[in-house]
Image (cartoon, rainbow, N blue to C red; front, side):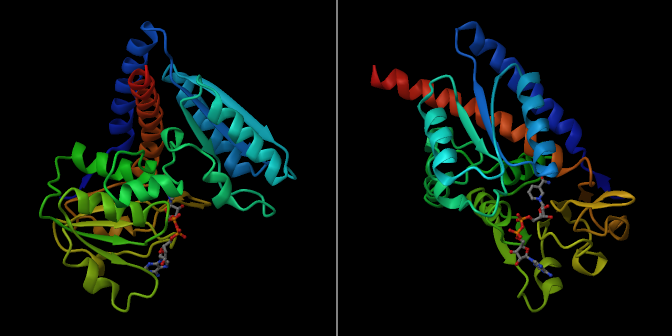
Length: 287
Ligand SMILES: NC(=O)c1ccc[n+]([C@@H]2O[C@H](COP(=O)([O-])OP(=O)(O)OC[C@H]3O[C@@H](n4cnc5c(N)ncnc54)[C@H](O)[C@@H]3O)[C@@H](O)[C@H]2O)c1
């Protein structure tokens, strides 16, 4: 029998623990705050930012939001980031991607201080992950690790296949799994025989953006399958995995929706809290 991993429930439990911790820190006078920056009016980005802001407020954190027009210049966006970077009330900064075509995301992301980089996407944060140093890790891959931990799946010594090595999910996830003692294989669009990589894995994580890529021929009996993909269809959201085919083959599987998606927002709250605590620890040290 294949068990469904309830990401919604696991995320709810994390969010309530964050809210409790926020209430405790608020009692000492400091309330964590997240600044979201949205440039332009892309409808999907607006929906994502609204959901993140709602979650931040529900956790009792402060919600700082900046909306810049579609044609904002590099200098205008940079000035907003610099102002938020200098504001001690702002614990974390999130620059919603993608940016309009005239803006180069990399240099703007890199203006976010490493202690406020709640998306974990700055060069400094990526470097800290690679060197296994303290830092904020990208939300979706950390959410995948939390899901595996919540399900009690042993990572040390496990064989994990990560399908897709994108900068947002696959690449950082492979590093997080390695750090936890898994033996990690990474497959991508040029992998000649995908099934030969995934069929030996105890854990298969799929983050490719290719709808229905993974099916019964790719998964060994009893494996855990984590589907990061999200595709909107007339029948609702679906993932990168043909979930129905894996019923009775996979040991555990994340549904879409209700698997990895809710974890991404939960981990944004965790990162905002960690950023606030990191900042106060630094402030205390410099006294
Ligand atoms: N659930 C969430 O919260 C969440 C968050 C971020 C991304 N996503 C989803 O995860 C997916 C991946 O996102 P991303 O930003 O990492 O994408 P990306 O475009 O950066 O990377 C895609 C990767 O998939 C690989 N790939 C493409 N075709 C392949 C194939 N046929 N076989 C094997 N590998 C193949 C590419 O080589 C690439 O490494 C998307 O569907 C995205 O919507 C979900």
